[in-house]
Image 1 (cartoon, rainbow, N blue to C red):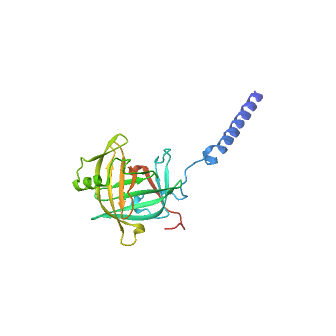
Image 2 (image 1 turned 180 degrees about the vertical axis):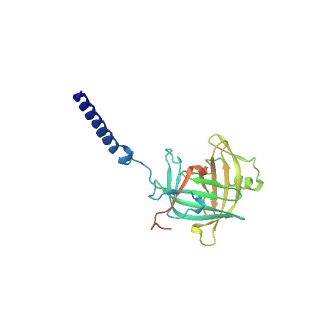
Image 3 (image 1 turned 135 degrees about the vertical axis):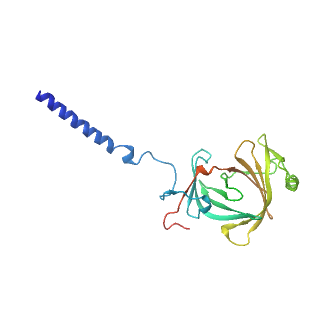
Length: 221
């Protein structure tokens, strides 16, 4: 009887020791699996991207080419203006590529990202300068261009002024936007004065996929 009791006590003690060893080596104690994300030490805050400043990081869920998150370290905050509309342009580099996030508030909230460095030509999207001028003159929502075997619908075309770093009198450009059918992508065609056409693939983003990290103390603002 004494032997059985002693074995029971020793068995219980061994179980306690094994349990303690397991906890001390658990991922929670060791910091978990290694992460590949590059986010700042500061905590995410519930902040409108409109209020982001240089030094902050805007994280966009699953937006990279490999579907990982883009953590865009903002180094430039500029603005666009067209008539009475004004919107914010946040810019920074991720994996050596300069990216842009445009944040709109009026007439309705909107988020448009240019998140890849691929550039297209007028020939790639099947148009000429005269065709773009005609589309702009007509301002017809039924206007389309052909790209990737799809008909992309005209969304807007207008003159814009760009204020880099929110300074100066601004620089003029003209922009056309064409919307992918049944998709979130946009073809953004821009013509700056004395510059060739700049044509990029942009993307409408879901606000729920964006988190803003406030710059840590001492960061450039």
